[in-house]
Image (cartoon, rainbow, N blue to C red; front, side, top):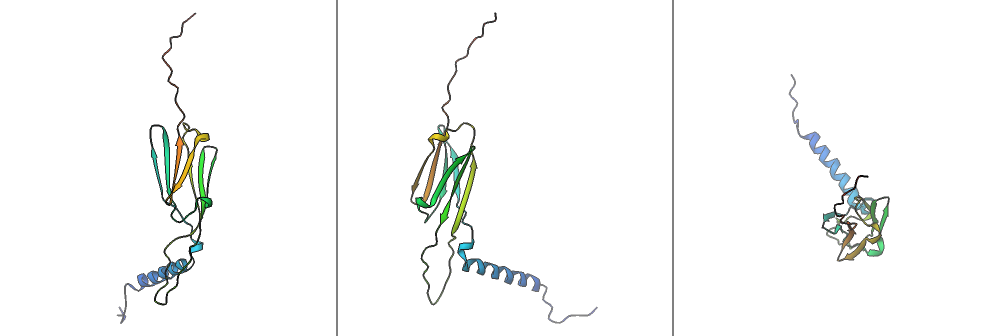
Length: 143
């Protein structure tokens, strides 16, 4: 068996790390190519379902909400802010670009009464439930 001088068992891992770092640097230098995926919170109350979408820096004019075949779709674009360059550093961590999130709605919703409001970077959508009509028990007479 030949002993190889200077063998580094972690060389392949280091090479993989370097390639991964290069990949990240390419993405950081081109933030418009990365899809923006907003975070979402959903909850249910007695009278409605609620969807809250975090959209910091997104104007309400850049957001679309559509309902088609019991699917609610929120889409839009987060535009690039003015970039500031400094001699000592340059880094952009904010993600920009088009986004889209879709939600299957349950059968008990009233799509004609859906409301949405945008406040401080949060889009809140209220999806009212259909009012249930309580039916009293009824005895059927046999003839």
